Length: 307
Image 1: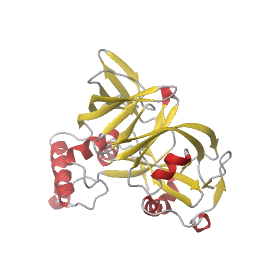
Image 2 (image 1 turned 45 degrees about the vertical axis):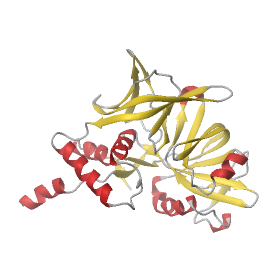
Image 3 (image 1 turned 120 degrees about the horizontal axis):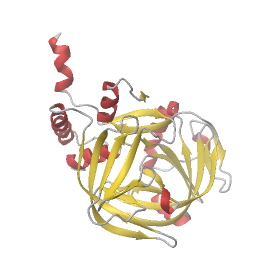
Image 4 (image 1 turned 180 degrees about the horizontal axis):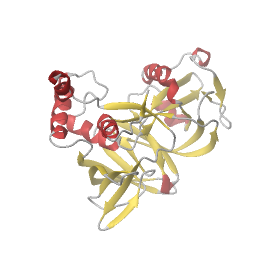
């Protein structure tokens, strides 16, 4: 009996939970605070790079703001990211601000389990160099998990050009609401990155949670292009304006005209304007969130549905 009780404390929580959430997620709010001011950035901040960990937002909040993540239902503070202004991104019509993540902390677990779990996770990351975020410092991964307190949707990105077609999953995406732009942070090593910069158009398919297995298999296309659209493991449909294949079973299909791209650390940061937006079905979308966020919700008997 006592072994069953102590076992969870000897193993780290999973870093990530794959969950089904009806978009747009509203269970966690993100508030940017600086110099006595504040702004809701739940739909206006995104990850622009993993190494270094960089956050982009439409708001210039000065040199050292913080982002607070709160449970919408209880008002409880779940985590904080402390930022340091890095640079500006200037487009033809607007500007964005980039921030390095200087520090972060979460409150999803009580003391002493919180620091103990962090130590266990960091030790496991140092041992397992084949993990999804291998190459990042454990502290940066912990900060990234705090950014994922707002569950991040998973989409499939379709690229189509003469001699090159591809489709692959992403979750470093999101609207930058006040600017009217939509961002994608893609590893610079992705095989389709140069084509996206040249063609300046992509199609985004919002994926039902039930398609998790097939979506994850398409991760291989970050390194190798799709040989034939007919080889897809699901039916496709052509997007409305671009005529690029999208997922027929998608909840939503958006066409993006890329207006800006620049290299930021380990990633190419794309900014686009939505040319068309088709809402095709209601349902829960595939999302990622932090494992300690799911643990917090389990403790309150309101866990997210895992897939």
